[in-house]
Image 1: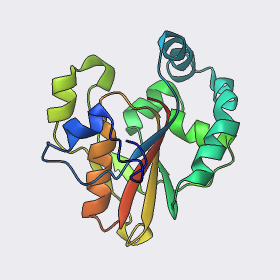
Image 2: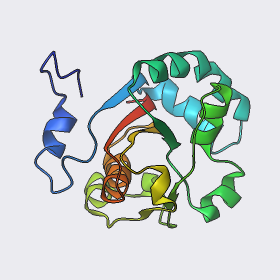
Image 3: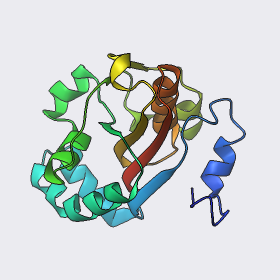
Length: 177
């Protein structure tokens, strides 16, 4: 989504505005455009455990993060089963390398990998996020951070859980879009 002052809204945000989950995610800002090189790079990082790749994104992530209006930064969580599989949460790794403080109040139930689902399945899935400590996010401006914005379904679900738990607003920052 573009800056409201420019009044240009991306096609994906226009589609989300027509869905029942509209209104939870204020906007998304991405550091880079997703392409085949990005796909390969993220596969090395996320699925092969090449943790040092996160350092490549640190400076740009920190700059974009500083531009966002936020009181609390939350990395998009992965389930405990997925963490055991990978050995780390890729989004937390990105934030660590960028030296960005964050809290992990948002939790996620285990589901099938998003990459295995169709766009339609992703958009229509049931809520699988929940807030562990509602007081930590109460009336706060939240910034969700994730690695890749694909369909937006995961970020919209996370934003919905946060707003329903009392967050003032939720925006997101992703490495790729």
